[in-house]
Structures are given as C-alpha cells and as structure tokens.
Image (tube, rainbow, N blue to C red; front, side, top):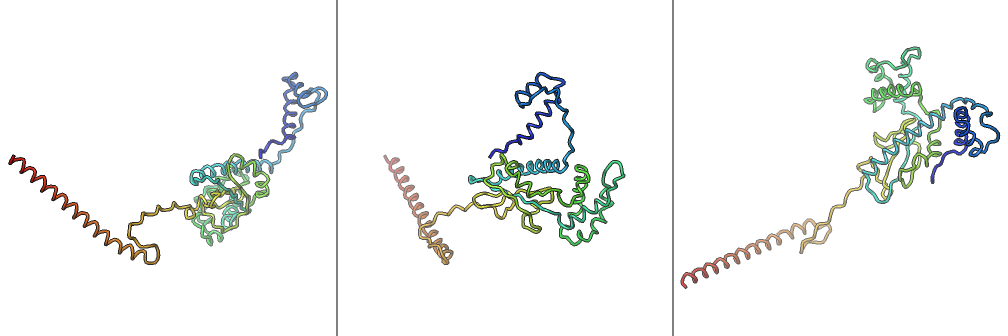
Length: 300
C-alpha cells in the first residue's frame, strides 16, 4: 500500500508559503489563494502566519525514523547478496526498551563528568577516566567488561552529535508503537515478504552484531522459505553433496555398506589387472605380427 503525505499538512504548508510570497509575487499568490486553495478575499489581507513552538519530541521521532530506515535498507541490501533465494525475505525489527545494566552504569558515569558551564560543550578525555569506568560494579560483574571503553567512546561520540540527549537511558517515546505505526513508510521499497516489530529480551541469542539499544533498533533478515538467518552462519543452508555413482557389485546402503564397499574394491582391482594383462598380450601379439610381416617383405 502506498503511503502518501498528510493532505492537511500539505495544505497548511501551501497556504503559509502563499501568504509569505504575496508581497513579492502578488498576482501569482492571488491565483494560488483563490483558484487552488479556494480562499475568498485577497491574499494580501490575510494574517501573517503565526510562529508555533517546535515539538522536539516529533523532531526526534522524525530523525529516529530516518536513521532507522537508512540502517534497515543497508541491512536488506547486504542480506539479498548473502541469501540468494527466489522465495523472498522476511524481516524482524528488534527494539530494546532499556540499556543493559553495565551500559547504563557507564552512561550515568559519563553524564556525571559533563560540566554544563564548560565551553565548548564537550566531555572530558576518556583516557584518564578508564580506571574509574572499569571499576564500576556493574561493569566489573559483566561478561562484556572488556567493551567498557568502547561504550564510553560511543557515548562521547553520541554526545558530540546529539548533545545531552546522549545521556537518556530510554527514548522519550514508545519505539515499538512508532515503528508499528510507520512500518509501511520505513519498509517501502525494501522488497520484504513480511516484516514485524518485537521487543528484544536481554540475553536473546541474536549474535553480537544484532543487539539493539534504545534508539538503535536492529533488523534481522531471514529467508522466507527456511528462515535461515543471514547473520547466523551455522544456520545457513548447505549445498547438498552430489551422490557418487554406485559401482557394479557394490553393496546396498545400510550398516554393512562400509564393509561391502571394501569387499567390492578387491574384485574391482582384480578385474583391472586382468584388463591390463589382456591389453599387454594384445599389444605383444600385434608387435609379433608386425615383425613377421616385415620379415616377409624383406624375403620378397
């Protein structure tokens, strides 16, 4: 199904632009105002558009959908190359409501090191913070403790891009609800047979590269026929081996197949020796005949 634009929103946009451009292009603006928008009176008499407060939540949702849709399309393109199937692909979006405890501890620690009065707005260098980060209780008790500094670096990088929003331990909106509402928009053009949105359970076996975080959903792509995951090599379909042609006299398959095959090998070798012996005798006979013919020619 095609996902179109919001007609009311488009109408408001055209109306506002028509009023704004009326001092510069009054005749064109009046044409749009009366003929296209169906308004009465003169556009030059219309009230100037009032400025509305920016809805930061909607802005974040828009940016979220843009980033998620871009990441999903890259994943689908990669999967189409890995999974060569004629039956199509299925997609499953994993969404995490919260960070794992050890990552939450690192984010909270990094937030404590942020100085709002400092200029420019930035986080301190990570190297002096390393020992303190590794000493955090939730970090030490985690099996991912070796990745602590990578997470801290990610928080710092995220801060440089999004500011203090990088310290949020969960999104200010319901990710699952938003993705479900806009599923047709973000999946448009992907060519997936089906796609659904589920909440990720901490500890699920999805592979290290497929663990979602708040604000960073992950798309898992599988073959529609057998459900073989693109990122799970052990589940990838193996090409069946071509059956070897059975030798004459070989035993039927079963528990005695190996012994029978070994027994069939000896007669095969004996037959080969007999064939080689016959060929040698034939060559010897042909050579004697040729020699006799040569002697008869000399006598003649």
